[in-house]
Structure formats: C-alpha cells, structure tokens
Length: 215
Image 1 (cartoon, rainbow, N blue to C red):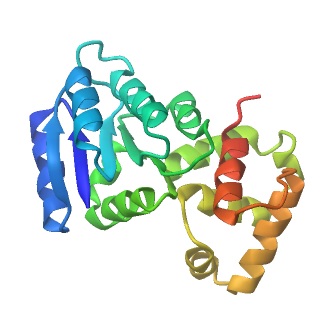
Image 2: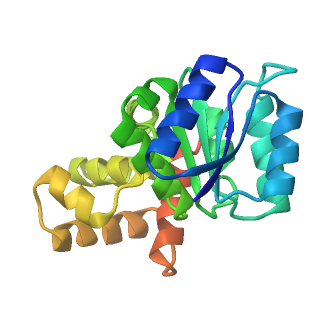
C-alpha cells in the first residue's frame, strides 16, 4: 500500500515513516509543507495520505485544506488527518462529502502502533477512523440534541464505536453482545436519524456526519 506522509516536525515525520514501513506500507513521499503535499498527492496518487492539519507556510489548516483539495480532484482519496487537539470543525469538514475513506486522530494515538496502523488500514479501505476523544466530546455536547436525543444509551454506545470506524463484529466484541444485536441497534440508529435504505457503509458515514453536525 502506497502512502504519502505530511508532517513538519522531522522526528515525528521520520517516526511515522519508520512505523509504516515496519508494517509493510510503501512510503512514496514524506513532506513537510502544504505545497509539497499538494504536489505529492497529485503526482504520486497514493493509496492513502497521512496528513498533519497544520503545515507550513501558513501553520493554520494548510494540511487539511490540501487534503480536501486533493479529495475534490480525486474523489474518495483516503486521508487520515493528525491533529494536536480536538477540532470538531476539521472532523466535520472531512466527512462533508459523505464518501468515507477519512480519519481524524490526535497525535497521541501515533504512539500506539497497533491503533495507528489499524486506523490507516481502515481509512485506506474506505472506512472511517475517528479519534475516541473527538467522539467523546461530541457525545457530551450533542447527546441531548435532536435527532441524537432520540437514541437510547446503548444506541449511543454503538454510535460512538461506529464513529470510530468499528465494524459490527468489533462493536459486538467491545460491548459483549451478539452481532445480531449490533445489527438491530445500527438499523434503529439509521431509522432515528432519517437515513434511507442504501449501502450500509455509506449510511455509516452519513450517520457519523449527523453525529458531528453542529446545527
């Protein structure tokens, strides 16, 4: 799997490259600025990009904007964004096109190799990988809002794990319930959020987008 890495801090960038290569990813470019990232994504067409939100020259949201531009040019380009802090607007922007293949992790997660590599693989496969801290903050903020307020406590637990990008099998194992029970909960969630029947992967992305909706 071919990866482009964008991170302005040399030590972290080098660590990401070494970790990815240790898990048999091919890092085709490791860059440190927005312009370099845009060029690498356009010319190399990687299978997935791992991108810091804040890159030179602006050090604002340069990395995120380069990634979003690349996804507009190449719809569905898998992008895993790394951030120092929880920025709900950034997470929502990533999900806005509803096509999946996106992730948002806090940089602390990079130090958990298994969790980080799992997130890269899920994003590359077209899924989502949202940081648990992002989901936890959104849960605290939005739990009483409509239509999220209609979800039961168990459905909110399933929604939280779904937003992290977990499969029904993984959710069942985490909650110590059957996959059939999880399937029933996800069906209830889709219904309460007003998501019409369609591909389940697409509905999961739309459900996460609803979960992140700022109103």
